[in-house]
Length: 480
Image (cartoon, rainbow, N blue to C red; front, side, top):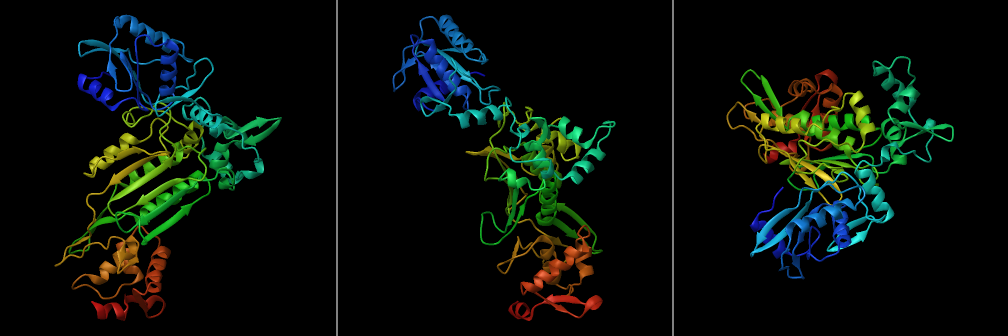
């Protein structure tokens, strides 16, 4: 990691801030160590030796090697010792400047003589107990998931789910379900009694949200590129495995498909995003989010041009946006292990590389990663804003983009409307017709979709039982 002359000028021009601080050569090592601690406990930064004043007066250092030694002494005074890249010496305006870089995502929580500091503006401020506890857990030096849930007992676990999980494992010998949960960090002993941990409650609890508020998924499909009044929403609660399964169903039901209908009605379908990539992002969000953050869950939002998955908690440990493809660190290793046992997640990695590869295979843009004020977001973008449904007849009808005449419709209902709308095609549709268009969907779901279109006054049901079919309502026919 090196800093160019232009970058150095820009640092000085920008002035002292959250990520930049400077000192003269005569500054006390203690002051330098305080700033190093504060930046290491925050989001990193740059320290310059040989610059002073509010306007960044360049005075330089007389002996660069001695200044570098001062930096190293300050780093060694920190607990644990702060390991940073070797300080860089740069000549600026004929004077030597020593540059110290503190990377983002440092692996430990650092202190100086028992004081834990953080960077706030241009100040080094003490971490209060909740902030310190958050940082300790975030950097893997403590684990929220293995803490005992104070008000929970063994009766708060769904033992049928525990037994099903235990029976699916191989190589565990005669180990009982309770012993397996102990090994996996889902149970622990307190005062001679076994108590569930947060991991146990989240993975196997009868009412997980009673003990961990915000441990849920909110999924929504919006008709346009922004949030609006036309949308479908589903709130997913229960155990983490149950939430993931419901989220997968939501994706299948609400991701749009590119469809080719040839003269023989043969179909070729692709979702607007690779299904495995979309699923991977949801699983990762559930597995690696920060469960200490109450009142905010995982958000799965699908817009007409993109899909966003947002999880509470910034990137853990040494993981940063820059190294997310290569760095491996788990905030919740117990949860990850159990989800891996269940086949939801690969234990050796986060699947980021896989998501990137899947998007590339479908000739889509690479995923976008973003840290928000209190969380982490991944964005997938589809091929174009309006995902087309192409029909091999004259004047193909475009997709409805989630709404028909101002009424929200799901992808299967859209298929039914397009079937009835295409020029020269049938003016009626049956359950069997829609089932043929959506072969992977359960017949009961097909029936409910058509019934819902009747409720929305888009279709009218004609006939009875096996002879029934659906047509556009007379009002819609007259307006066409």
